[in-house]
Length: 545
Image 1 (cartoon, helix red, strand yellow):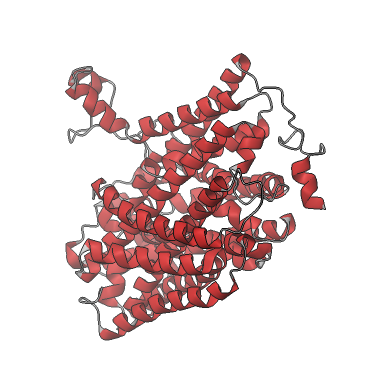
Image 2: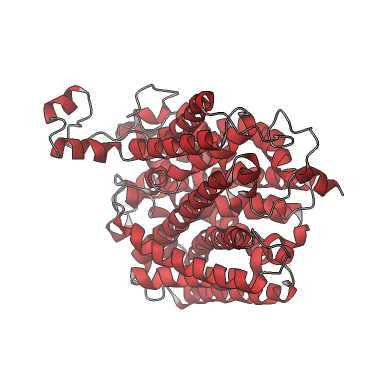
């Protein structure tokens, strides 16, 4: 970062990093209780919460992958996401948020113990911690790989900078620091993308019609006809509008129901009405950011391939991982001094907006679990700060562990094989609890474990097939007859967009089947399921007092 850039770029990045730590220090003066540190006193403004939610969920992975996705699949991913929005808004806004906000827990996983048992709660906590460690580790790794490519620094130097700065301001300021720094980071994300769009339009004298025509020509020349597929039952077809829409809809429903990073933000608002406003704010910003990043990808495609400018750093436009690096590489080599640093600061902002949320949420969940048996309530701000610090350091170190991922896989294909392998099983635990009254704790736990196994099998299907051939369980001829051997000699990969739909379906169906054998233990479900939500319950009555 400091060796390949102009001094103006250095200054922008350093000012950003120092500013984030300074904001954390300033906000730390207001942390007097658990409610302040974990939930912002339950009085955070809904618009800030909404911006924070989308900043956390998009992360640097979206900031890098969406422009690159245009190079390999056009607007398929964007259109698929847009198709999913009406249904996910209806379910999250109309069902998930009002249901969960009745309880106003500190940790979302408290619900699982009340609905099922202690085992289900512990499984939910474990799933969540694994999800966050993999997610945040992958965010740090992907961001660092991108920055290393354009900076000349060592991987460990970039990982250390990104992880430690985010850990410091989150440790100091708690959820309030997380939310307000996320607001700043969203503004950086938007500003960076909009500037690149208009910069390319001005320097090339072109606009959307030329960019779109160039994109269509590129996709046809590269043989990416499958990028406009409406739907295919062949799981080897990477993208289609329906599979992308289904996958994204399930991701949002599971994330807004069972992911502490998101649910904790809604708990920080005054009531369900404010939480719903936060969700709609985040949704609108998400639509805008995804549209903006797709336009960035289309503009970059025109700049390099339409205008004939050579790609820097030896990037190959046909390699998935290289496509994810085109945006930051363009910023460093093509923008005026200072503006490249601003784009990299936006990339750092995207990474940190997820990391701060992750480590704060882990600290919250662990602190709640540690205080579960306390008969007298004590404040845990001091211990929570230590938990946040430890969690941040652990996530930073975990980024090195994820460096085993193939470098040519690409961000969009890597996500379902890492942290999103846990998203649907975790969400399934909650959805089974809400919509399947007959299911007890054992049914839900067995279903979630089967959902996780489904995620792993689909995500790593090509590796499993290769191992079965190596172990002589299958022969190469059998694999070829089944259409699982490509002309290049590689084993066929299943589409990553099938991971979450299949995992959620497995979780729900297995839980349903087991519930016929082993129903819940007969304890009261008043207020704990969708069908009994209006029945009086101490858990919800407490909120009305």
